[in-house]
Image 1 (cartoon, rainbow, N blue to C red):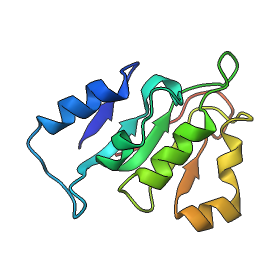
Image 2 (cartoon, rainbow, N blue to C red):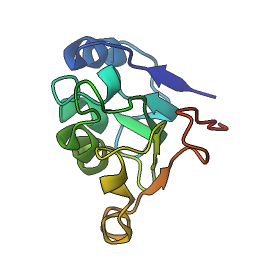
Image 3 (cartoon, rainbow, N blue to C red):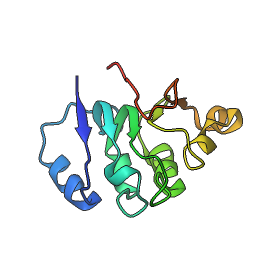
Image 4 (cartoon, one colour):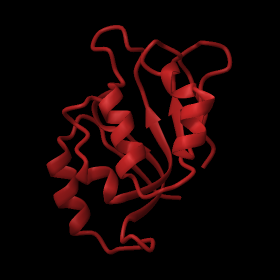
Length: 130
C-alpha cells in the first residue's frame, strides 16, 4: 500500500520530492497512491493546483475539526478534486463540520465523481482501510 502523509509541508517541497521518486504512474503520469493525507489540514496555502495533479490517490484524507482555522478550506478540497488525477476518489474527513459537510452534497458528488467518508459516531476518529 502507498500513502503520502503531507503533514505541514509546503506544496513546492512535496512537488520537488515527488519528481525525484521512481514513478509507478497512471496514464496521466501521476503517482499512484492508496491515500494522501492532505497538507496542513486542508489549508488553501498548502494545496497548490500542481500538487494534486501529480497524484492519483484513492483516498484524500482531511484531518481537522474546523474550529481554529476553518479547515479544510474549500479551495484546497476543490483543487484535490479538480486537478487530482484519481477519478472516483474518496474524500475522508475525520470530523463533520461546516467546512467538511459541504462536500457531502449529492449533486456535487455526482458532478465531481467522488465519494465522502465521515466518522459514524462524531468522535473525530475515522478508520480508512487501504
